[in-house]
Image (tube, rainbow, N blue to C red; front, side, top):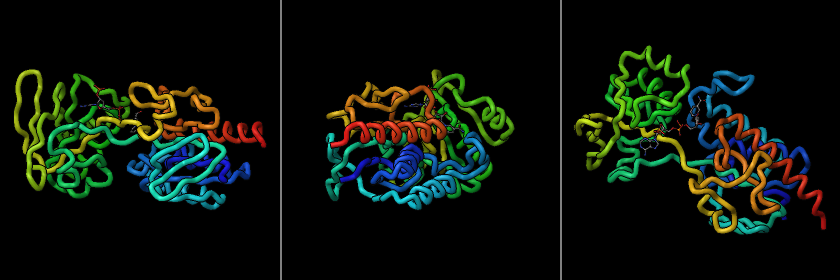
Length: 298
Ligand code: NAP
């Protein structure tokens, strides 16, 4: 029997594990993919206190090692179901007193034909992972938030030309990034425009783009889709209250509708989804879980 099972080994989940271990709780962290969550794809973290410029990979690895060193058990197994007392993965069922859901979010898809087929063959959701394949080539980024603008800036140093395609007439990215973007001579901005078709059999060859005047074909080597995330909460919605967008409904105390199940990070209803708010949630959720355990001793 575990005291706390944490689903997800991103910044929220691993921080929760650190707090839980420091309270001497028996902790299991379950992760479907690799540790680190979305931050692992960030080239340089500039807005987390005290360590400007650290790469997402280094940050995640330090956090992972810190969690392991404190004695948390971490298993790479995909959770497929939870109840109030059990967590089931594709391999096993584990018993627990409390659960923290820290599953984060996955990349939103354009939902176009060929998107899945051509992923890894010209279509990518991670510029820092795949950008190097496009040295001196022509690429496009779709999106208007911080990720898309950061991706365009990053790719402009690698690719010959970068098209930044956004469906509105202005970006929602931070001013500091937009100022950096303006400096990039090889970034061509296409506003009020969306990608409407992905062409290619074995690899992406071109995309169809549509604005309010016309539809045309753009020959590109790579498309980076950066249109936000969707929370990974599908496997919990049988028992946990989730809103229309799929986020677990909880306040700053990270409590869900079930008294021994807590939520932490980007999969929770909140206004600001950042690394700093994810780690903050991890600390809060673990503290609430520890409190629950001490108040509900058999
Ligand atoms: P985001 O802020 O949600 O932006 C997604 C963008 O994609 C929006 O511009 C949105 O358009 C567009 N979009 C959504 N669905 C679309 C669709 N179906 N077709 C075309 N465009 C679509 O996502 P994000 O940029 O990945 O950022 C996620 C969070 O991480 C944010 O809180 C962000 O601040 C944070 N982040 C921070 C940093 C940093 O601080 N350096 C870096 C990366 C990310 P609309 O504008 O029309 O909504």
